[in-house]
Image 1 (cartoon, rainbow, N blue to C red):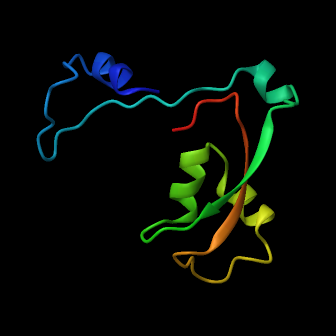
Image 2: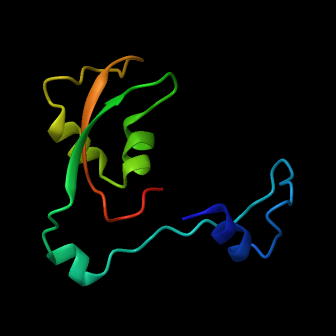
Length: 99
């Protein structure tokens, strides 16, 4: 997903400045049945450093993975709260666009 896609979905110019409180449409990529059933060889694991304000949900959205998977991959690292500077393992399919 790119800014030009968002502009097209909302029928606005790329140079258009959004107003405070303005609603826009943002579409999420949908996996096809083939993508869901097919094992990809492009899976990658990366180390992600938690930043101030991050949440498991925000990180999961960034990499297009589930919060449950983040918890599973980081069982021994997760306490009650995320801490800035903490390193998490994230596994994702490099062929799918991130959000």
